[in-house]
Length: 269
Image (cartoon, rainbow, N blue to C red; front, side, top):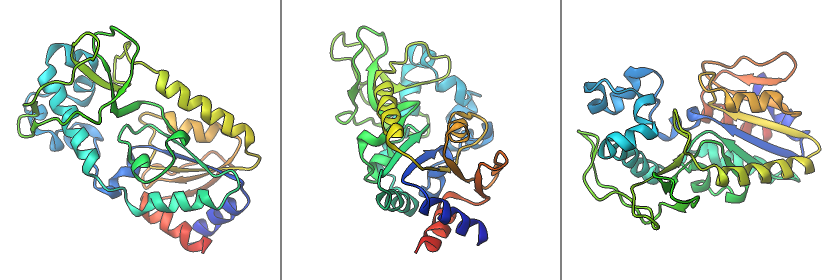
């Protein structure tokens, strides 16, 4: 594939790799695609029956009004992400980074922790929307953010309801919520993500020849796409449905994430 060979040449010319990833990177690992209400309700039929959309449940107001439903949704996702095995494309990205003098850094809008699970260094990951594997107080009694490692939600998946106890704030004992930037969210604590972004900017200052590999980032929430397009590096965009690139910015592969990364790896070898 000529495009994959061109991607490999951009990588050979670089001294640092920035991986930018949206929800599409998880599809090859078996994670659900929430695009459109029908896709979302196919995964959560109880929310479909109640005509509750993604924007309504992924919202701090849902935790205040219907906490068992909100934690049913997020508890299911937490369990799902914990048992999901990252696909082979993550290892390909890690190996590409290992061959470059400045290594790799990750910027992702995903909250699933799959890059950490795929053995990327935690100190070289930016989770711009936060992480489901961390919690904060729903009432905002303090600015603490803590790991969710000890929380084991039991969820009635048919009804999308939490059947076990809520996670609790260690200070005030109010219900805890995921440390995720939700829709209509003025209470998200961004300190953890801010520290991640500071480390990214420090790393970028050390990189002379940057290459960006973007996987599965769409235009619906364009944060990830915009970062790659505005970067000073050359951009490799892997996207089956929205592969368009600004003129002269780089190379696009109109394919799924795993297939595109395997094609690039074959050319590098």
